[in-house]
Image 1 (tube, rainbow, N blue to C red):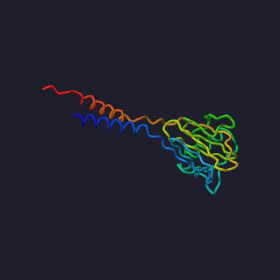
Image 2: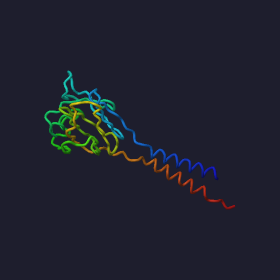
Image 3: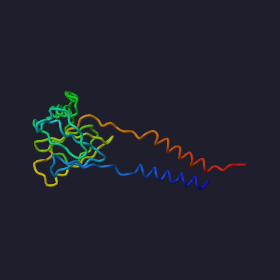
Image 4: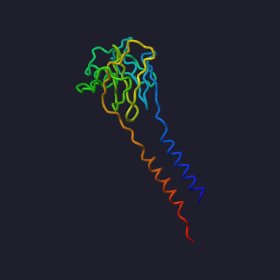
Length: 189
């Protein structure tokens, strides 16, 4: 019986350790230069969608967890950002007529957001980011000596898909707890 109790306790400790692990963070290099964004727990940035070396998206792009392409940032308004984001996603018109939530001028270099997509206006260019964290994402911008990429504002579009804790995890915890309580009973003969 003691073995069963120790096994249950060890399982509970292992499950608690697994749930308390620090969130994954990824670093995305902006435009091949020294500037980066660090996303925790995770995000991806758009690349491609600009044939012939243009920096204005005209086709669906692809997502990368390591590189963000710089796209044309003029004109600087939510409508144009929404239009270009829709093109990159491959669903032209998805955000047309929907205003994004634009931050104030001169935002900090740390952004916390529950939005599904973020557009960061850096100098005369933009990067398009998808929140893949399943909830709130924390984005930290680091210039690392880069010039001309001052963050003037960011715009949020949509709401992130929240990933719930799987029901099986809760069921497993309840089963382990039941084993623990069951092992404490003494059999009467």
